[in-house]
Image (cartoon, rainbow, N blue to C red; front, side, top):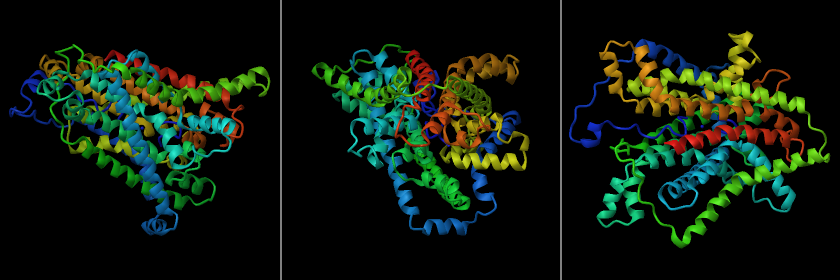
Length: 550
């Protein structure tokens, strides 16, 4: 599941199109003969298919586990609560996805295409919300509301959940859109303006269509995450399919009913993947700026500069300042003695576990993603596409289903792994593998296939070619994917709650345990909240800096 805290897919940067060759730039539509597809070598096909099967294992658990039947699924769909839950889930997916797209695209355009002061600072500040787990943001807003506005309930329900989750997740659209804008050659937009089009019309007609893949990837990550979100929506009293699944599996003792509803979520994920293909459309020829490094002519904000600065500041305050204020206030209470002593040993242990499990997940996911990436980029086709798309399914399933499936597999066939960090890391890898795959696709696609062919023509083998040509060129993107996996694994809550070794805690589960899912008093949880924000800020800042270098 995309963690209740986090977060989705091919990664934040996955949709940025690879740079075309010089011939593609000059003659994008002059009938140049397409490069023939090469057969997928077994050295890639075998591990790629095995990884795809592993990624599909939670979905297979839903259908093959004893006790499930399609008649049960039909009965669930006929139940009085199922369709309201589906409508609530769809409403949340749509509102958060649309809100994140508007906020992310708007912020990217402001920074990359206008005279907004301090663009580098705003890039970092608008990326930092990625380091705020969604359930921590929800905790903070609920605690803030209880403390300062006890008679209002505006933050609850669809409106509150949509606003808070949008503020946390919009960087998944902001980062790839900003990177794409900085890579595009401004000549096309300037040509449209020279023909009499205004800046907005030229941008919408020429530039925005070229940003469609970047926007689509961010929206897909967010929408799949919304299907699986639990911690934040439970805290904000908004019922979705995921909250119903967790309740039926953990509270009501109805695992078959929970699996039937999870099948509905899996079907929803397939619908979103199909919609993503439609949103991307046919790949249009895109010329990037490697040959013209000059920046585009910025739009002058003039007297409206102050308004846009205030708007950016308001977003940063809502997304970052409130969580920081609430957690810091609780920490001050601890330091001054009003909140009791901090259990430094438990805090340090939870911090160490979080870092260890997240780093392990990032490294394993990076290695597992490589054959999938190379199949998708170097050997496109039906099989490669099916393998790559398979990695997305688990990203939309609730963490409780992910945990139950892996526990079932470990108990029946891999018992030594039961309740071990190894099994937990495997769960992280299955959930967040698309983030690594998507990032790697960008880097491998930018490492031109002609370079590989020249190396092979000089007698170099495939391993040498990859290690000396492709890998160095793709290394920044591979690092980006690893950062994204580590960031989301460090924030994950639901699967960690169910699969962590007995007696062990991550920062997320320790925070949840201190509050027992309630926000009557955030003071006890504040040390873990502060630690989560600090540890999440490190990869978020690195991601922002990598965007600034592009």
